[in-house]
Length: 248
Image (cartoon, rainbow, N blue to C red; front, side, top):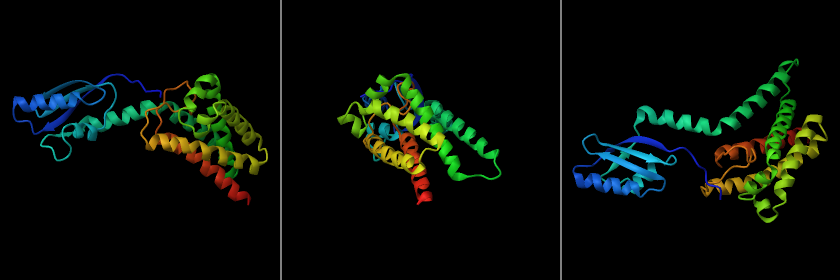
């Protein structure tokens, strides 16, 4: 499994319930036992805990280390900056994929602007062409790296390692097929099948909270597997399904 590395960070939390030096020692010891916590400073006078960690840790996990919700020690976010930091962290992590979706949406939208009316089916066709061409491009930059990452979670690649290589070229082929409008029924059917199989492994990894690298952009960007990956695959499934229905 490819564990994701991040810069060390320090956060200060509100922590109530400490009444003596022994309480401070107990709380500090408990929080230091949490995985990825490297340093803890607590103060009963300030009702605070300053925690240094290798990666962001969910608040409920810190509370569980203190004995759960029924514990006399209650830890809470320092609300004036916690939400902003979480948002900033999320945006920084997924910036590459968000920018890709923005540019594809912008370009395909501008194509429709040049026409007399907005054609939703044609927009989806162009969007999917851009999606598969761009994503296959990043996979091709390090095909071996993509294949190794992909077989960590994909249900087919786990059993047939060569599928990682085939999948990258399948995306390229689908991108070209959408671009030249090659037999829309066949193209969309292949997309629906391939992406439906792909999302199975993604769902399993996210639901099981596995800390692995998402291979959607190959091995170029170190993106974590998350609901963003699910949305990405689900979007392709929904679009191909809608286009098939429009042809029936």
